[in-house]
Image (cartoon, rainbow, N blue to C red; front, top):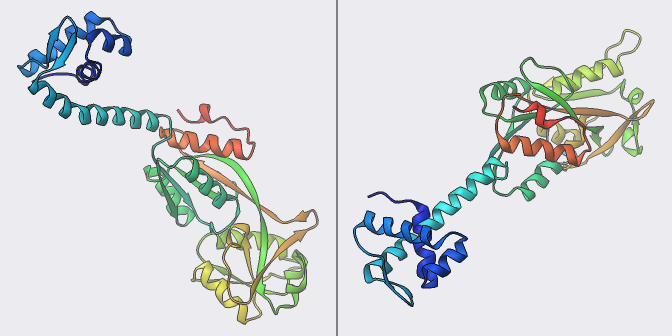
Length: 307
């Protein structure tokens, strides 16, 4: 048995309108084309679907049963075509976004939430891991794009700056600096600073060495094999502080407050960049990049980057 979805669609339309002439008008095809197609269908299944008369067509008993069975088949085929077209346009399918920083607040959280709202049919996966793990995921194709602090180049991946976020100090509400609206970098030189050993702790550590080192003296930075959440949760009961990006400030911890850090030029900022493979053919990635580009008025050319 061999027939096409198109033939089933023609037969259903003819049954709904009771006329080959009316069905052909609805389908915008020649009546002879529709008639021949349905005749081939009847020959393929070995029994008439319609009784033909000068007044139109009426489904036979077997034809009525056949039409009932054909409707879900055609509906499923149309849904499949619609899904494939959407996937080809990046409106469906899947997208894996890697990151190594918190998404409790800030631009990354905002873009992820907005993307999910406007692309509900895309199966969206967030992967949080250290930079090395995310880059390995990009290389293997398990991750489509990694959004990381800084703009370090990595061989084999395209890199584009995306946005900047404020740097803040997290400290006990009883700390002497908690009463200020903003904290200067120089105010932090005598503080004990706790950072997680996991990302983005090492990058913040390197940044602090450049900002706080003075007259041969290194800042007191302690790296802990604990999560950023664990470090922030213990600040309220001590005199130590921590440095976080704006994306971490959406979570609240007992007796812990956040204060923006200022330098000579105003608020201290850190940049975030997107990394992806030039040969990634996922249409959802292309649409995601266009989404970010439009939201932040960026100028990189997505069409020329993804082949």
